[in-house]
Image 1 (cartoon, rainbow, N blue to C red):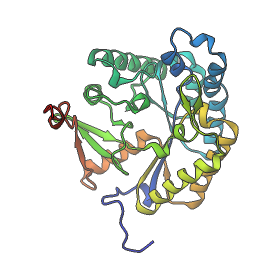
Image 2: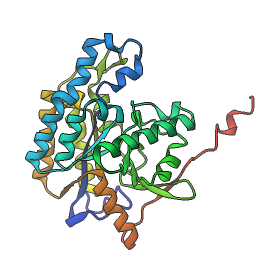
Image 3: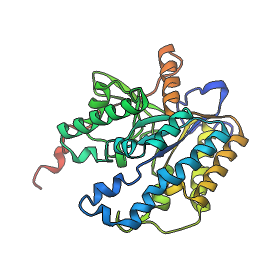
Length: 306
C-alpha cells in the first residue's frame, strides 16, 4: 500500500489506538420470516420450520459459547415475536452481557406499511424488549433493510441512539430529519451472509451452495481494507444460516484471524455509537450528515408524460 493512500476521507479515532472497529451482529429471525411469508400455511412447512428453528435452538448456544471463549460482547437484532417465542436464547445472550436491539415485531417490512402500521409494530416491539430485558433498546435494524420514509422520525421520537439499516458510508454518519439526528452504523450486502448462503424454496431464495471459504474470502477482504484505512466493519449474520457447523467454524476462524492481526476493537454497536457520540460532543471528530427524506416523492423528471 502506498504510504499516502487515503481511501477513507475522515476516519474516526478508535479506542486505545485501534485500527478499526468490528461488530459481528446476528439477526435472530428464526421462523418469524416463514410466518410472515406464509401465514396460512407455515405450520405445514415442517422442513423449513426446522431449518429456521435451528437458529435459536442449536446455533445460538454455539455462538454464545464462542463469544465467551473470545471474551467479546456483541449485538443481536431480534424480532420481538422471536423474543417472546424463544426467551431462553434471549436470556442466555443477556446473561453474557450482549446487546439486544430492535428488529421489528415479526420481521415486517416498514416501507410496505402505512405510517400508522409501522408506528404500531415499532412501539409494540419496544414494549416487548423492555419487558424482557429491563431496558429500552438503543439500536435498530430495519427487517430486510426496508427502512421507510417514516422510520427515522419514529427512531428519533423514541430517542434511539443509532440505526444499522443503511449502507451509505464506511464509517458512522448522522441521519437528520431537520429537527434532530442520530447515528447511522452502516454495513453493506457483501457483509451479509444472506447473499452468500441463503437457500430456501419456501422463501424464494436459491443462492448457489458453496464452501464457507468462498464467503470468507469476501468478509476477510472487507475487514483487511477496514483495518488498513481506519474504517468500521459490521457484518450481518443469521444464526440459522451462519450458525451451521461448517459455516460457524469459518466465522470463528475469521474472528480469531482478526484478533491475531491486532489493533481491532471488538464491540457491540451500542458501545461504538457511544464512543462516536463522545467524539462528537468533545469536538474531536465530526461525521457527515444525511438529510432524510432525500426526496419528497417521485422525482418530477419522470412525471412529464414524455
